[in-house]
Image: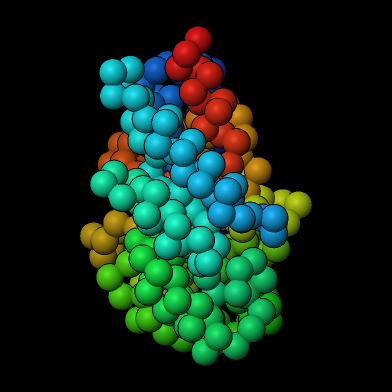
Length: 281
């Protein structure tokens, strides 16, 4: 597999972060930005203690946060384990909110391909609209790039018709060059979105890693005219954090991405409460 000749430019990254930081300060509590962020949320619960009651409560939160009279939009999706997809699909019936499911041996990615494909197939059969699948970081770090591509391409084929988000787990890849390779492999294999993190390791989303991913999307779009989405996930709890990823996306990719949930998402469990509080204030 041939990759672009990527050279990490720390100055460019620092300048983008600084521009986004200034926009966050200028846009504090601006209702339009807050509403855009709400519409971008994948409201998520991925805990070992998840059960029918807790997931029903999560769906209720997604449904009741929407308030047309106050121009508060619905969240983009509710994201759960495959065993809860059927319940979520039923709860969200008649709404625009998508049902998303993790799959592919989330969060480690450490099992055989046929088991990953079975899990993707199960989630699809239960009614998932979107699949969040985790990349095999071990193979990637080992330099087995073609194997990683082949696995993701097979998962893409097995999830045909569904929106596929590929989780890179950037906190384990660490170096920018490897994050760039992971981004390119995921994109070329057919991902609709690339996503920062599972949220299950100490280092989740970071502006630096997110910018490397944005650059990969920008360069791919420039050469193919195909738009790939991006999802920030892992430790995003505050309005300021969410705004940072919004403005980084705006800076690198423009309005088409930053204000459209078909191209920009934030995976979070508690962020919605913070954003709704901003609106009410």
